[in-house]
Image: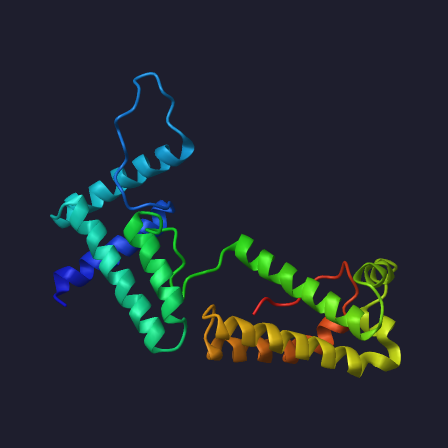
Length: 220
């Protein structure tokens, strides 16, 4: 890859990150004169104006700049598949979004941040899974266990001498879910192994935590 091409792809990626908007297609200008642009349309217009300036500074067209980013993203995805970071199915879905105009700047590439919303969502799913598994091991409903936790107890407090059974149930249920995700092509075996390791390494802390305290369980 030439120095100019590398500079082009790197600048494109940086421009998209700064713009912070999704979509690769140009802003559709064929609107009624009196129509008020939507927030999405305004973001696209601002993005294209910004990228237009970047393209001009590089001496290329806006389309060339966008294509450079798409090519760099595709190469990064291929590398991630080769390294076992994501599955081919995951890569193909991201590529499809980029090609269709939904993913430029919006698709999360390997190594990128999950975003606050994504982390919160995964942490919430993890908490619910642990709660359900613990309740199963203790022969009680998740609602009853929640009531116990709201009174200021931890799962370990509620489990008492049955804590080992709770740990086993949580680990077995998590393993089954991760195996199903791998079989469905939603994650790689390496990702599943890392997630399970993260859970087991933090399980004692999670079960001893009293609701309302800080340090929520990590989302693998």
